[in-house]
Length: 161
Image 1 (cartoon, rainbow, N blue to C red):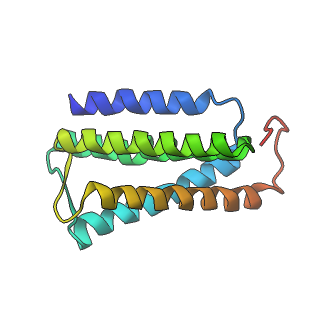
Image 2 (image 1 turned 180 degrees about the horizontal axis):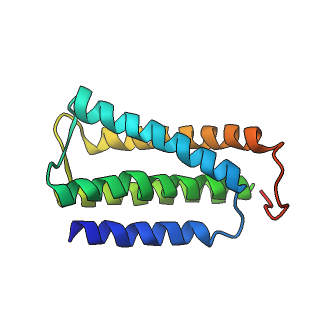
Image 3 (image 1 turned 180 degrees about the vertical axis):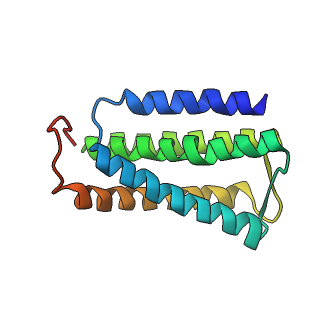
């Protein structure tokens, strides 16, 4: 059940990303995704294994559900944010997109916790929210660097951002 829920949410998240009207170049998106994944995997590893702040379920289906959340849903939500961030110059659009993505991530974390996919041991929702805000800012910085790195690359000219 948990895996099906996470796969449906992952499918929705990827579909939203695919149908965004303005996106960064493919190279910038791939580079941003890879850097987000590395940072997030290290963050989860430190919180779960080194600091023992969260406990990830050892059940196979629940663990795979967590991997789907971490590697697909969370990363693509952050990619949606940075693509909206760099596509629009209006501050309210940027602010509302950041708040809505942060709210979506918080709701998904509550769902993961209620499904016993992971549990907080020496960690709280407030600390997780602060970590997510830091991750949002870090993602914008990573995407900015990715755009600068890929700026000189040869593209097809279809990308407006």
